[in-house]
Length: 244
Ligand SMILES: Nc1ncnc2c1ncn2[C@@H]1O[C@H](COP(=O)(O)OP(=O)(O)OP(=O)(O)O)[C@@H](O)[C@H]1O
Ligand SMILES: [Mg+2]
Image (cartoon, rainbow, N blue to C red; front, side, top):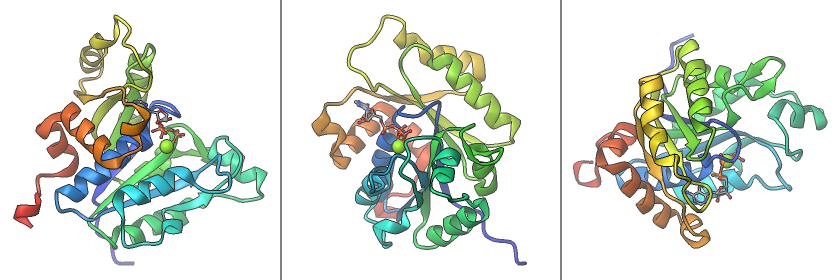
């Protein structure tokens, strides 16, 4: 078999479910497009679909890729549970080989594949295989999205250790303020994470109103302000429309 070209893009994971992976991904897809890239979103498995895959739909709308919306998600499962459990409930077995094939096929339709994993790194997909096994197979740089709230230092450090243990390259950590109001300790978390893990936090996505977080352009503006140009260059590369 001829070796395949490595995938280009990001694998977005979280320290947990509901930490802001989709929100950050929407912003990154829009920012990638602004830089003249052709971003392609991929949500390999989405659970809690009723019946539509809402994360996959939001990612598609942010990127407007040249693929049908239904191609963004390979397994849209109803049960709001870990992929392995939601799949079993429907008599489905998640096939990691199929997901790797899909990722390469989708990547060929653009030049920046953004994969949103389910939950965090040790969420089971099939048997003892988890998000981290898929991330290893795709070999994309890992972006870790974490909460700003209490507990995030421990969760982020655990996630980064598991990434390192599996030889994954980490592109960065982004904190997302998913709840209004800042507790007194929160501004210190980024520095603690950097000291503990050696991994810089690229920036924070501040708490946004419903209007702002449902508009991909406003989200993109907010993430750009939160990360700065250096952080974005690290995630998206430096190509801009005027250099295409
Ligand atoms: N910066 C923010 N400001 C306000 N609300 C936010 C912010 N980031 C995320 N949220 C909200 O938090 C909730 C969870 O965010 P999101 O869906 O992006 O998380 P997720 O990690 O993708 O979740 P899942 O594990 O279900 O895929 C959503 O309702 C989202 O609108
Ligand atoms: Mg999501």
